[in-house]
Image 1: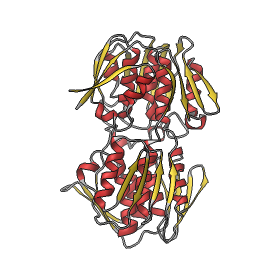
Image 2 (image 1 turned 90 degrees about the vertical axis):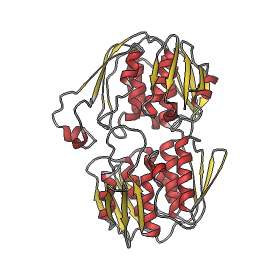
Image 3 (image 1 turned 180 degrees about the vertical axis):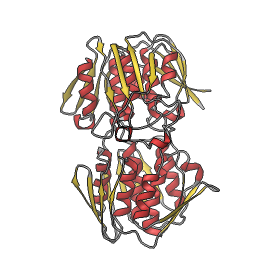
Image 4 (image 1 turned 120 degrees about the horizontal axis):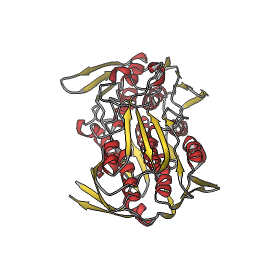
Length: 441
């Protein structure tokens, strides 16, 4: 167990780059298991979640060779059909192995997936879709596993009731080797989905996005070797953008692009955050007092749910009252009580919503008393030091940014959660002028 010590008040400036997208790299590892030939994935982030996924592949009988930031995956033959319970408890993406296991072996034992506790995050949408493709799936409360088997997955037309990034990708993985044509309606359109499709097409899959939210997959008999270079992580881009502005600094992020963070930039402009688009990246910098701007999170192409924590911090430094309405997860304001310890003025509440079923992307049955779907933020406030605890990856980034902007020395606990999504964050921030160090507890 380790912690961060952060001495706030320093201006961050300089040039930096971001890691490859976590939400692409982890799923590309799963996709690589659809073929017996080698698959090469470049620009992977060396984070703890990726190492766990590598362990899962090795345990199933494959091998992964990681050299610098490139992984070469070989799954000549699955030797097991069960995902280790302890590994699956750490990484939510582990549930996606159900697709290559069913496609290549006809059976899979998948634990109820773990990862950050952002609410219930059920995989019912994935299970429902795979059952429609011909898989028999039952959940055993005795062992905590989904038991799945099939003689052959068959192409279908399937419509998602709600947007689901992971379910869309899992169904794509299932469809590429299925018999016939699979059409996914109301499918997720996040850029990470298209990166996964690019990898699969390089492996010989037949996939076409026939509409913004429609994907057609023609099953093929066999896939072959392929490769992908993972694009920069848009969550890291936003993290560093906010770091520049809340520390009154100036950071140029090499490789960042407007198409990845368009809705963030649309909110940042009226808020008074400054940025310049360059041919090879984006420069973010502080030019004066910010103005309060309200946002509502939603599936792509809307304001990303992973950005709401950093945005909340940014709004603590803005003049006026702003509101964040979270519609993707039913319980994602765990960082708020920690920011309050540092002087933030934030009220949680549940707004009146005329049509909750249409408004919220989570299952309404998973909502609970005490869960809040909106935050009202008052600013500007002067943040001070504190001892705070990380609840999930993006909350962790938010608290690090708060400590950088605050006066005094702060202690941040639970940084192992941050390590799941950010590679050596303290070293990269240190090169920009941050006074941040890692220590054993």
